[in-house]
Every structure is written in C-alpha cells, then in structure tokens.
Length: 161
Image 1: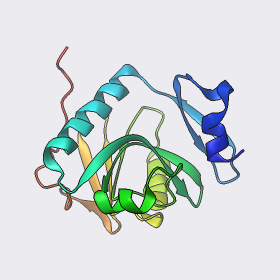
Image 2: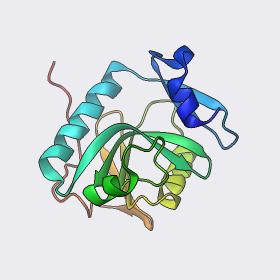
Image 3: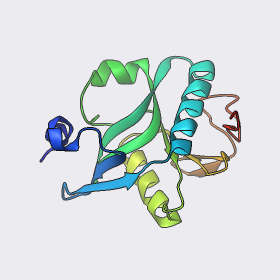
Image 4: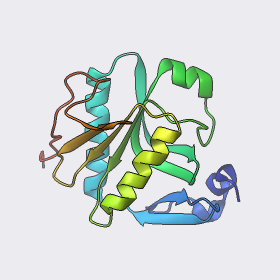
C-alpha cells in the first residue's frame, strides 16, 4: 500500500496510534498520550504567535528515504505550501520539523529521524522532551535556539490543569 491508500483505508481510521511506514512500506505504529496532544497544541500556539511567513501543521506526513515519517508538528513557509499544496505525503520536508519525545524514543532513533528530515529538506529539527524542554538542531548539529523562529522558548509549559 502507498501512503494515500493507507490514509484512505477504512480499517485505519480512528486508530489511537500515530502511523508511519518504514523503507519497505511496512506500517509502524506508536501510541500517543493526552500529554503528547497538549504539547502539540502548545507548540502550534507558540508557532502561530512567533513564526512569520508560514503556517504550522500537526501530524505532517513527509516522504523520506526510509519511508513516510509523520512529524508531530511542523512549520512550513508559504512558499513550501505553494510548492506542495495538499500532497499526501509531502515529497519534501517543511522548514521546521518537531518531534515530541516519549519514553520509547531512543537517542539513536531520534538521530536517524533528524538525518532523514534533513535529507528531505528540513532546515531545523526540534525535539520537545517529556518535561517540555526544547532542543534545536540544524543540519550541522545542535544549536542554542531556532534560527528561523526568533524568541521560541527553551521550554514549553502545559501545566494549566
């Protein structure tokens, strides 16, 4: 099955899992928590407030050399969206890709995902830790802050309940 067929298949609708494919097109799933969803919303709110010249997107499917990966949050410039419209998955990465970490994510896995997102065209990859701490990466390695979104906090808070 290709990505669009997976998205269109009734059997895969309403699953409480995030789905991706590996390099052979095999479906991989991982569960998401409510806290994960709260971080997604908080990150998007910050991006809407600070990032100019583009829009955020949640659950952004990106074709990589290792299959389709689904970023928790991404930010694309208006130029990115003009080029890619509503393609599914996107054949290139938006400028910023954000992954929200869970206990099951290993450092090796995240290094691999960063590498794949950069190879697909990402300018920055951000990681949001379980406590909201942010790590920002350019293709050259970790950087102290985003070079695309000035003023993005080093920690995102969700303790509002």
